[in-house]
Length: 131
Image (cartoon, rainbow, N blue to C red):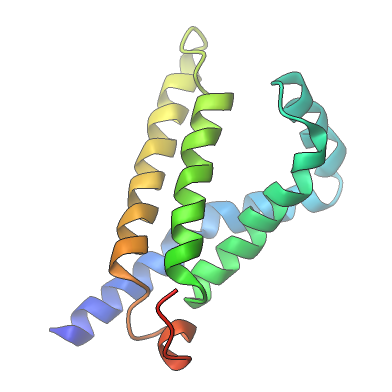
């Protein structure tokens, strides 16, 4: 049964951060200036963008490999809820309600991962850490 649980957590760790890794990577190059302008238009200071990239890309990779999993998953869950509240709370725009609910669903998954941990197939397990 433990093998099945470890396999399920591995699959979850592969699936969950894909969105964040791709989004963070996209903000690094040509998308940097546009993303910074969008953030500022929404009332979020542009200097927060490097932290956003670090969390999306770096945190996504950490989740993928099961490194600092519990802490990173909790921080990512909080980030995802804040993103929903800051960027997707204008329900007058049709797509925002769906994006808001998507973010809350993703945050729920990261909360589960923060409680369950990374499973056996992870760097945390190799390092014998329970971050």
